[in-house]
Length: 337
Image 1 (tube, rainbow, N blue to C red):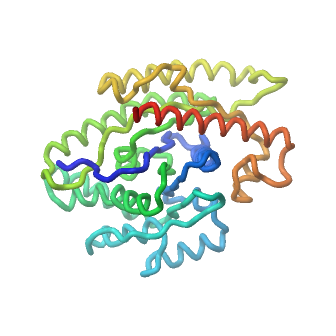
Image 2 (image 1 turned 45 degrees about the vertical axis):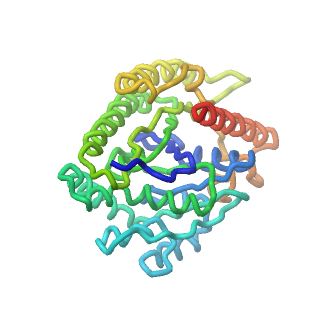
């Protein structure tokens, strides 16, 4: 088996298979703040719903991207992977869009990526049969991201994944160096943590079995996404204190993160969940009210919106995401040493 070679950028997925926890908003604002710190970031819209693309790109441009993604000049993730889907050969490298900030790039999403997800289920089965097409299909997105990110010269790649535990997210997580879990302060998010850890460790173990079957010369996913940390989100604050109905969840989230993620990952390999509970809590994002819909409609970070919220609210949001970006960057740099 050949390792995932030539990986220069750190690959991260902000992932929780429960919907409505603010994955896309967190991804955009974390990436934007990292760019302010001088890092270059490539965003991969790997959700067929294309929420990330719609967030950052004008609607008429999104329509044009989707209308023309099948053609030779297509610029979406689907455009790049279509040759693999049609068994015509290797993926096609597409140029990412430059969006919003200096150093921020986007590989646009596409609703037709759901067709490639169906292929991935077949590729996975073929890999267990030691079929070359299975290995190459499973790793196609990873190799595409490597080619695009190297050409753009980025420091970080962030995948924006859909809220499910399907074949596409399996390939994405197994391609990542790290994952970050956003958690809303509600009972459903706590319940989701119970399946998240075991699902991810099952994928890691299954891929290790596949990797053992692979020919020595073939490109493979690294297959070892490490838990970088978590971010509680959406809680309300009154008079400087967390609202009572949300305060109880913050302590429960910490306990569930430790028992359902950290402990489960350490049973597979201690290096997959290396750190203290204090280090795992990368930051927290309180309920941002009108800043979020304004951010999404204007296509800018929450702290840069126009005519929404107060100057104090925008400044507070900026500090929140700046501190979060610093924590993520520090954790990554520490692990490189």
